[in-house]
Amino acid sequence: MTARVTLVVATQNRRDELERSLAHHDGPVILVDNGSTDGTAAFVRRRFPHVDVVELGRNLGAPARNVGVRRATTPYVAFADDDSWWASGALDKAADSLDAHPRLAVLAARVFVGPEERLDPICAEMARSPLPAEADLPGPSILGFLACGAVVRREAYLAAGGFDDVVFFFGEEERLALDLAAAGWGLAYVSDVVAHHHPSAPRDLRGRQVLASRNAVLTAVMRRPWPVVARMVMTTVLRGPVGRQALRDALRRLPGALARRRALSHPVESARRLLEQS
Image (tube, rainbow, N blue to C red):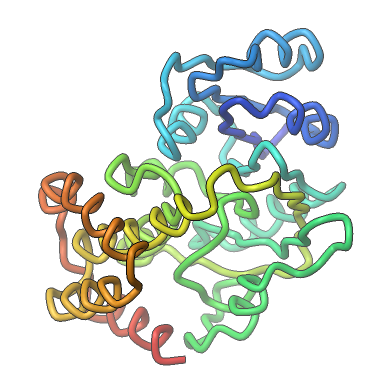
């Protein structure tokens, strides 16, 4: 059967994790290397010759995935991190669902975490989404997803601009999800499509907390009403040193966020507020 899904993996200096995860991937795989210095590209070419390796020479963050999506020739693209992989047969199921639901732009899978196979808490939230059910979607409607557990419709992803360099990395999914919904595409959680994620030890836990807060503010600046942005800034300030650092970092990226500011349609903003209230 002709491949319908290309797997795109963005990585930086995670050669050991890739040795484990790439062995699980079937079908076409594109590895986008964000300027690794540990010999990742040469190692993958030697150990996994079927993988198409793209060396960027520098760190583009989450937008590195855009390079892989543009390079893909299949109608659908699945993402994986260097420490995650898809269950056997999962991508065929995902492609079948995308074939059957032409408005579906993002299929969010059920993600099991670690050797103990814990359900990722975000999946539990998506499963009980308060958004109204939509008859032309294969599962609960959502306005967010985990990139390492998502399969996207390539044309929709590219039309929405993919991931952006304002957010750069961590929490990059939210702005894309909002823009896809605003363009009329559907996003759904489909629990019978499964991915596995065995997270590496965090390199910098405090840094990730700062990134999460910074990027939530930047995404709000790009898409949410100003009163929502103001409340988020105040909430971030109250988080103490982490919040204050996040706001200082956000200020450096504020011109880019303002340049890309575009108000959401009323239905999408209302849906986002419903999620915040649930």
